[in-house]
Length: 324
Image 1 (cartoon, helix red, strand yellow):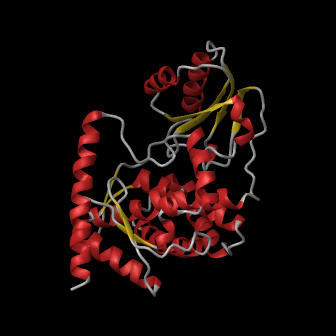
Image 2 (spheres, rainbow, N blue to C red; image 1 turned 60 degrees about the vertical axis):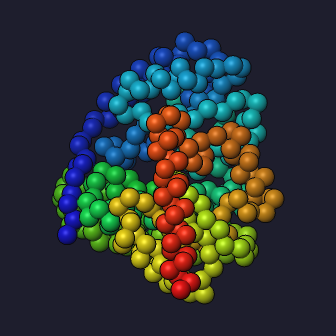
Protein backbone atom coordinates (compact mmCIF):
# COMPACT_ATOMS: atom_id res chain seq x y z
CA UNK A 1 0.00 0.00 0.00
CA UNK A 2 1.14 3.51 -0.79
CA UNK A 3 0.54 6.80 0.95
CA UNK A 4 -0.61 9.52 -1.44
CA UNK A 5 0.46 13.14 -0.94
CA UNK A 6 0.85 16.41 -2.87
CA UNK A 7 -2.35 16.29 -4.85
CA UNK A 8 -2.64 18.55 -7.92
CA UNK A 9 -4.69 21.69 -7.56
CA UNK A 10 -6.51 23.28 -10.42
CA UNK A 11 -4.74 26.37 -11.68
CA UNK A 12 -6.46 28.56 -14.21
CA UNK A 13 -4.99 29.38 -17.59
CA UNK A 14 -5.38 33.01 -16.57
CA UNK A 15 -2.84 32.53 -13.75
CA UNK A 16 -0.30 31.03 -16.13
CA UNK A 17 -0.91 33.88 -18.57
CA UNK A 18 -0.58 36.54 -15.86
CA UNK A 19 2.80 35.22 -14.70
CA UNK A 20 4.04 34.92 -18.26
CA UNK A 21 2.98 38.49 -19.04
CA UNK A 22 4.74 39.77 -15.93
CA UNK A 23 7.92 37.97 -16.98
CA UNK A 24 7.63 39.37 -20.50
CA UNK A 25 7.29 42.90 -19.08
CA UNK A 26 10.52 42.37 -17.16
CA UNK A 27 12.39 41.04 -20.21
CA UNK A 28 11.05 43.79 -22.46
CA UNK A 29 13.41 46.22 -20.75
CA UNK A 30 16.47 44.10 -21.62
CA UNK A 31 17.45 45.13 -25.13
CA UNK A 32 19.75 42.12 -25.63
CA UNK A 33 16.76 39.75 -25.63
CA UNK A 34 15.85 38.86 -29.22
CA UNK A 35 13.26 36.13 -28.68
CA UNK A 36 11.40 34.41 -25.87
CA UNK A 37 10.07 30.88 -26.34
CA UNK A 38 7.89 28.92 -23.95
CA UNK A 39 8.58 25.23 -23.38
CA UNK A 40 5.37 23.88 -21.92
CA UNK A 41 2.12 22.19 -22.87
CA UNK A 42 -1.26 23.81 -22.45
CA UNK A 43 -2.91 20.44 -21.71
CA UNK A 44 -0.83 19.96 -18.55
CA UNK A 45 -2.14 22.83 -16.46
CA UNK A 46 -1.84 22.09 -12.73
CA UNK A 47 1.12 19.73 -13.33
CA UNK A 48 3.48 21.66 -15.61
CA UNK A 49 5.67 24.55 -14.65
CA UNK A 50 6.53 27.33 -17.05
CA UNK A 51 9.89 26.81 -18.77
CA UNK A 52 11.41 29.28 -21.21
CA UNK A 53 14.21 29.76 -23.71
CA UNK A 54 15.73 33.21 -24.13
CA UNK A 55 17.71 33.96 -27.28
CA UNK A 56 19.95 36.98 -26.80
CA UNK A 57 22.59 39.07 -28.57
CA UNK A 58 25.51 40.56 -26.65
CA UNK A 59 26.25 40.46 -22.95
CA UNK A 60 23.31 39.57 -20.74
CA UNK A 61 23.01 39.25 -16.97
CA UNK A 62 21.60 35.73 -16.69
CA UNK A 63 21.80 35.79 -12.88
CA UNK A 64 19.52 38.83 -12.77
CA UNK A 65 16.94 36.98 -14.86
CA UNK A 66 17.23 33.81 -12.75
CA UNK A 67 16.73 35.92 -9.64
CA UNK A 68 13.65 37.51 -11.18
CA UNK A 69 11.87 34.21 -11.84
CA UNK A 70 11.97 33.36 -8.14
CA UNK A 71 9.07 35.80 -7.76
CA UNK A 72 6.82 33.63 -9.92
CA UNK A 73 5.48 30.41 -8.45
CA UNK A 74 4.81 28.79 -11.83
CA UNK A 75 8.10 29.61 -13.57
CA UNK A 76 10.71 26.92 -13.10
CA UNK A 77 13.52 26.91 -15.68
CA UNK A 78 14.99 29.43 -18.11
CA UNK A 79 17.48 28.38 -20.78
CA UNK A 80 19.71 30.85 -22.61
CA UNK A 81 21.08 30.72 -26.15
CA UNK A 82 23.44 33.24 -27.72
CA UNK A 83 22.26 34.24 -31.20
CA UNK A 84 25.77 33.43 -32.46
CA UNK A 85 25.04 29.76 -31.61
CA UNK A 86 21.68 29.67 -33.34
CA UNK A 87 23.00 27.21 -35.93
CA UNK A 88 23.48 24.80 -33.03
CA UNK A 89 20.00 25.32 -31.57
CA UNK A 90 19.35 21.57 -31.49
CA UNK A 91 22.38 21.21 -29.19
CA UNK A 92 20.64 22.68 -26.18
CA UNK A 93 17.97 20.57 -24.56
CA UNK A 94 15.85 17.45 -24.96
CA UNK A 95 12.75 19.62 -25.31
CA UNK A 96 11.14 19.39 -28.72
CA UNK A 97 8.31 21.95 -28.58
CA UNK A 98 9.17 25.65 -28.55
CA UNK A 99 6.40 28.23 -28.80
CA UNK A 100 7.30 31.82 -29.66
CA UNK A 101 6.07 34.24 -27.00
CA UNK A 102 7.55 37.40 -28.46
CA UNK A 103 10.43 38.60 -30.60
CA UNK A 104 11.97 37.21 -33.77
CA UNK A 105 10.79 33.77 -34.86
CA UNK A 106 13.95 31.69 -35.32
CA UNK A 107 12.10 28.54 -36.39
CA UNK A 108 12.95 26.07 -33.65
CA UNK A 109 12.38 22.56 -34.93
CA UNK A 110 14.16 19.45 -33.73
CA UNK A 111 16.27 17.70 -36.38
CA UNK A 112 14.95 14.15 -36.05
CA UNK A 113 17.56 12.85 -38.49
CA UNK A 114 20.50 13.57 -36.17
CA UNK A 115 21.29 10.10 -34.78
CA UNK A 116 23.71 11.26 -32.08
CA UNK A 117 21.28 13.79 -30.64
CA UNK A 118 18.51 11.19 -30.50
CA UNK A 119 20.87 8.86 -28.62
CA UNK A 120 22.10 11.53 -26.16
CA UNK A 121 18.66 12.93 -25.38
CA UNK A 122 17.18 9.45 -24.90
CA UNK A 123 20.17 8.57 -22.69
CA UNK A 124 19.57 11.65 -20.55
CA UNK A 125 16.03 10.56 -19.69
CA UNK A 126 17.18 7.05 -18.82
CA UNK A 127 20.24 8.02 -16.80
CA UNK A 128 18.91 10.96 -14.77
CA UNK A 129 15.20 10.35 -14.41
CA UNK A 130 12.97 7.40 -15.19
CA UNK A 131 14.06 4.50 -12.96
CA UNK A 132 15.67 6.67 -10.29
CA UNK A 133 12.40 8.55 -9.83
CA UNK A 134 10.13 5.51 -10.01
CA UNK A 135 12.15 3.39 -7.59
CA UNK A 136 12.19 6.33 -5.17
CA UNK A 137 8.40 6.10 -4.87
CA UNK A 138 8.53 2.34 -4.43
CA UNK A 139 11.21 2.54 -1.72
CA UNK A 140 9.40 5.21 0.29
CA UNK A 141 5.95 3.70 -0.30
CA UNK A 142 4.80 7.28 -0.73
CA UNK A 143 3.56 8.80 -3.98
CA UNK A 144 3.58 12.51 -4.67
CA UNK A 145 0.66 12.48 -7.07
CA UNK A 146 1.64 15.70 -8.82
CA UNK A 147 5.26 14.63 -9.31
CA UNK A 148 4.44 11.09 -10.45
CA UNK A 149 1.99 12.41 -13.05
CA UNK A 150 4.81 14.59 -14.36
CA UNK A 151 7.51 11.89 -14.15
CA UNK A 152 5.47 9.31 -16.08
CA UNK A 153 4.59 11.95 -18.66
CA UNK A 154 8.33 12.63 -19.14
CA UNK A 155 8.74 9.10 -20.50
CA UNK A 156 7.48 10.46 -23.81
CA UNK A 157 10.87 12.09 -24.45
CA UNK A 158 13.08 8.97 -24.62
CA UNK A 159 10.23 7.19 -26.43
CA UNK A 160 10.18 9.97 -29.04
CA UNK A 161 13.94 9.77 -29.56
CA UNK A 162 13.88 5.96 -29.75
CA UNK A 163 11.23 6.27 -32.43
CA UNK A 164 13.56 8.53 -34.39
CA UNK A 165 16.12 5.72 -34.20
CA UNK A 166 13.59 3.39 -35.86
CA UNK A 167 12.86 1.41 -32.70
CA UNK A 168 9.33 0.00 -32.63
CA UNK A 169 7.66 2.16 -29.97
CA UNK A 170 4.07 0.93 -30.42
CA UNK A 171 4.01 -0.81 -27.01
CA UNK A 172 5.33 2.32 -25.31
CA UNK A 173 2.87 4.52 -27.16
CA UNK A 174 -0.09 2.35 -26.21
CA UNK A 175 0.80 2.74 -22.54
CA UNK A 176 1.42 6.50 -22.86
CA UNK A 177 -1.92 7.02 -24.65
CA UNK A 178 -3.75 5.20 -21.85
CA UNK A 179 -1.90 7.17 -19.19
CA UNK A 180 -2.53 10.44 -21.05
CA UNK A 181 -6.28 9.83 -20.88
CA UNK A 182 -6.05 9.23 -17.14
CA UNK A 183 -3.93 12.33 -16.61
CA UNK A 184 -6.10 14.64 -18.68
CA UNK A 185 -9.27 13.50 -16.87
CA UNK A 186 -7.66 13.43 -13.43
CA UNK A 187 -10.11 15.81 -11.77
CA UNK A 188 -13.06 13.79 -13.04
CA UNK A 189 -12.21 10.61 -11.15
CA UNK A 190 -9.45 11.10 -8.51
CA UNK A 191 -8.56 7.43 -8.83
CA UNK A 192 -5.26 7.36 -6.93
CA UNK A 193 -4.99 3.59 -6.58
CA UNK A 194 -4.53 3.12 -10.32
CA UNK A 195 -1.34 5.15 -10.00
CA UNK A 196 0.23 2.12 -8.30
CA UNK A 197 -0.38 0.12 -11.48
CA UNK A 198 0.98 2.94 -13.64
CA UNK A 199 4.07 3.15 -11.43
CA UNK A 200 4.88 -0.55 -11.79
CA UNK A 201 4.23 -0.46 -15.53
CA UNK A 202 6.48 2.60 -15.81
CA UNK A 203 9.31 0.70 -14.10
CA UNK A 204 8.93 -2.20 -16.55
CA UNK A 205 8.73 0.16 -19.53
CA UNK A 206 11.79 2.09 -18.32
CA UNK A 207 13.89 -1.07 -18.22
CA UNK A 208 12.71 -1.89 -21.73
CA UNK A 209 13.90 1.58 -22.81
CA UNK A 210 17.27 0.86 -21.16
CA UNK A 211 17.76 -2.25 -23.27
CA UNK A 212 16.32 -0.78 -26.48
CA UNK A 213 18.73 2.15 -26.26
CA UNK A 214 21.71 -0.05 -25.34
CA UNK A 215 22.13 -1.21 -28.95
CA UNK A 216 22.91 2.36 -30.06
CA UNK A 217 25.49 3.10 -27.35
CA UNK A 218 29.22 2.42 -27.76
CA UNK A 219 30.48 -1.11 -27.12
CA UNK A 220 32.28 -0.50 -23.83
CA UNK A 221 33.71 -3.57 -22.09
CA UNK A 222 35.22 -2.19 -18.89
CA UNK A 223 33.46 -2.02 -15.53
CA UNK A 224 33.21 1.40 -13.89
CA UNK A 225 31.30 3.34 -11.25
CA UNK A 226 30.05 6.86 -10.69
CA UNK A 227 29.15 8.41 -7.34
CA UNK A 228 27.20 11.40 -6.07
CA UNK A 229 23.71 12.42 -7.14
CA UNK A 230 23.38 9.57 -9.66
CA UNK A 231 25.33 6.57 -8.31
CA UNK A 232 25.71 3.88 -10.93
CA UNK A 233 27.59 0.63 -11.44
CA UNK A 234 28.31 0.06 -15.12
CA UNK A 235 28.83 -3.61 -15.83
CA UNK A 236 27.96 -6.28 -18.39
CA UNK A 237 25.48 -8.98 -17.44
CA UNK A 238 24.55 -11.84 -19.74
CA UNK A 239 20.84 -11.47 -19.07
CA UNK A 240 18.72 -8.32 -18.93
CA UNK A 241 17.00 -9.63 -15.83
CA UNK A 242 20.30 -9.49 -13.94
CA UNK A 243 20.33 -5.68 -14.21
CA UNK A 244 16.83 -5.53 -12.75
CA UNK A 245 17.55 -8.10 -10.03
CA UNK A 246 20.80 -6.50 -8.87
CA UNK A 247 19.38 -2.98 -8.94
CA UNK A 248 16.31 -3.98 -6.92
CA UNK A 249 18.42 -5.86 -4.38
CA UNK A 250 20.42 -2.69 -3.71
CA UNK A 251 17.31 -0.50 -3.65
CA UNK A 252 15.68 -2.84 -1.15
CA UNK A 253 18.46 -2.03 1.33
CA UNK A 254 19.38 1.61 0.64
CA UNK A 255 16.70 2.87 -1.74
CA UNK A 256 15.46 5.44 0.74
CA UNK A 257 18.80 7.26 0.82
CA UNK A 258 20.37 6.57 -2.56
CA UNK A 259 19.18 5.99 -6.12
CA UNK A 260 21.54 3.28 -7.33
CA UNK A 261 21.27 1.67 -10.74
CA UNK A 262 23.12 -1.11 -12.52
CA UNK A 263 23.45 -0.15 -16.19
CA UNK A 264 25.31 -1.53 -19.24
CA UNK A 265 28.83 -0.04 -19.67
CA UNK A 266 27.78 1.91 -22.77
CA UNK A 267 25.73 4.19 -20.52
CA UNK A 268 28.95 5.62 -19.03
CA UNK A 269 29.17 8.89 -20.98
CA UNK A 270 32.80 9.31 -19.87
CA UNK A 271 33.75 6.39 -22.16
CA UNK A 272 31.78 7.34 -25.26
CA UNK A 273 33.46 7.45 -28.65
CA UNK A 274 34.64 10.79 -29.99
CA UNK A 275 31.53 11.43 -32.11
CA UNK A 276 29.09 11.16 -29.20
CA UNK A 277 31.48 13.09 -26.94
CA UNK A 278 31.78 15.82 -29.55
CA UNK A 279 28.02 16.31 -29.68
CA UNK A 280 27.67 16.07 -25.89
CA UNK A 281 30.37 18.75 -25.52
CA UNK A 282 28.47 20.96 -27.95
CA UNK A 283 25.32 20.59 -25.83
CA UNK A 284 27.28 21.43 -22.67
CA UNK A 285 28.68 24.53 -24.34
CA UNK A 286 25.14 25.85 -24.85
CA UNK A 287 23.64 24.36 -21.68
CA UNK A 288 26.27 23.83 -18.91
CA UNK A 289 23.60 22.35 -16.60
CA UNK A 290 22.70 19.56 -19.01
CA UNK A 291 24.41 16.83 -16.95
CA UNK A 292 22.87 18.03 -13.66
CA UNK A 293 25.88 16.77 -11.72
CA UNK A 294 26.59 19.57 -9.27
CA UNK A 295 24.83 21.87 -6.85
CA UNK A 296 26.09 25.44 -6.65
CA UNK A 297 25.36 26.15 -2.99
CA UNK A 298 28.31 25.56 -0.64
CA UNK A 299 26.41 23.50 1.95
CA UNK A 300 25.00 21.24 -0.76
CA UNK A 301 28.47 20.81 -2.20
CA UNK A 302 29.69 19.54 1.17
CA UNK A 303 26.68 17.21 1.42
CA UNK A 304 27.46 15.87 -2.05
CA UNK A 305 31.05 15.10 -1.04
CA UNK A 306 29.79 12.99 1.86
CA UNK A 307 27.27 11.35 -0.46
CA UNK A 308 30.11 10.39 -2.83
CA UNK A 309 32.06 8.85 0.05
CA UNK A 310 28.97 6.86 1.08
CA UNK A 311 28.42 5.68 -2.51
CA UNK A 312 32.08 4.69 -2.87
CA UNK A 313 32.01 2.56 0.27
CA UNK A 314 28.65 1.04 -0.67
CA UNK A 315 29.79 0.11 -4.16
CA UNK A 316 32.98 -1.49 -2.87
CA UNK A 317 30.96 -3.55 -0.39
CA UNK A 318 28.62 -4.61 -3.19
CA UNK A 319 31.51 -5.80 -5.31
CA UNK A 320 33.11 -7.64 -2.38
CA UNK A 321 29.84 -9.43 -1.58
CA UNK A 322 29.25 -10.21 -5.24
CA UNK A 323 32.69 -11.79 -5.68
CA UNK A 324 32.65 -13.93 -2.53
